[in-house]
Length: 485
Image: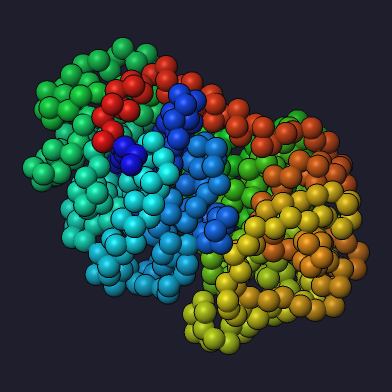
């Protein structure tokens, strides 16, 4: 059975996911068989697995760092927020229902069995399992029934390394405060700490390392400086998107605008476009208009299509989009964004909320009925206009049909997917991840007047290798491996 080590954080977004990915790649390069594991995750950025389920996108990236296909057992509990108060609950890759925040807190201990089952399965096929926590173990108001941090570590007997983010400030207080709030049994599981995202001369923090060690009795495994290329890897949380304007700024780039709807999902669809030198990708935050100079507007996926369509209209983006279309601009919808572009969206079974129907944006002559079962499938096919191959995954509820669907965008194994307007300026499809296909992306951008020679997959692997090098230089990876049991 494999050894295991768990990285927990002093808070959310301290860089645990990135560190786990880098450690996985570093350990694989040392000749070990490695698996990532996150007991519980909350994210609308999900990936379809080879075994027909879904997990958090971060765990899919970590699986890639290990050189293996993603599995539902790498993230056995996934929460996908649908509203400010509730989320869809996915256990070992399958949706089991929805839960309000309070009811989930009462139910979460029921999922510990599934979590431990998945963990044991991974241990049986690896030398080392690198585990990622969620949030912070110091959130003692959530400690009862915990399966994400110390609750899991205690049940599975996994040693813990705490990660503190120095970039946000207060890292000494965060680590010492976490020590103070943990129980004696939980403290005994902690083997030490990592300081992450340091900027400047690391030697200036020597006194900080000493202060933390003196007050906690924990050793330092090192200080990881800020990793500049982190933004080239898929992000997990929509909070990290910000108002991004990547690419050239000399006026010659193709501007592609993506409105940041409130339940945006699978937004890593746009990572390849963000790295294109001839593209300026603008993630438009709420309250800001869609840029008038955009050549293309892409409506992204959504975890709650009808609610996000109302959100889209509340920002005035429907008016901006129609003006963009009248000026001759191009429009693309992916998954939920595709559904929004149609004439009507019906939810007769109340899958997203109260049963009912709403008018869509009307730029495609199609209608959508939200219904089950949920489609979770990896697919390969071709773009019908350029003939270039595409690969990705479908992850959606609902079926879309209508006259414009006769002009399908994709052929996926003989099945037509998507729809296009008669003039070809408005398109939609269900396929996530299609922009990662280099030949398709190059041909598609050429049709918009932008050249591409980016090899995206190779670029991601190069960043993972660089991240592993970065951690080998700055952390005591050998000591971290020795701490695993």
